[in-house]
Image (cartoon, rainbow over all chains, first blue to last red; front, side, top):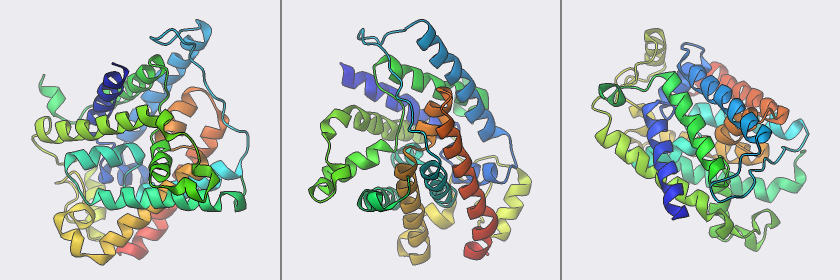
Length: 137
Length: 186
């Protein structure tokens, strides 16, 4: 039953990524060039509504459908890992035109060369795991 | 219902993403897609010699189901909800992309030059896709999240580390497009 809910949320997410064109390489390029409002509108709307959602959940102690409290894990406070990691992520996001959600959406949409991007992303994650102790965090 | 077959406006798209985050919170989970890449590594046996991948991946099975859904959603959207896949980007951007060699700008969903059927025999395109993926995977894990985990979930929870990560995303993206694209594609 729970698996069905995850699957349905995933399907809705996949449709949203494709129909919003957030999964389009061209939209990502246009965003980094500041040539259109589209992507900023999407992220801005999601964040504004997201802030309201999180505040409501915290203020009113909203519980999950299964009765458990909804908890938010604070991020570790540091700068280097977010700035350097984020920078490297940005290089890849602009080059491949896809971040980890849309990669899967594009696979389903039939753009199979994206499988090479996914392969790269898995290998990149693996390399991070191998080098983790040597990197500044 | 005609609008649903067109490009979704930004306010519909943004609201839909917020709903995805809300639904995941309501089923007791959270919105973060790049964690799945770590799970894949663990399933492939990366835990044998690296501590970072030694965790109970079965606890992350729910997120793999979300991934499966995202794949199915992509199939449905592309095959049944998109009569015309052309992405209507700014005409100036189209002109600019054509000078970089992207002839399919303005008429396709993804550039032929990177995602068309011909790339399987194009070593340059394959290398670029692999490199892009490597950066995304390495960077997301180093930063502890990607667009969903930081830009959406993190900023929604007013986490300043997520804002630092998002600034990093944009700095990297802009360096790639302003400085490296002319060298790679020019």
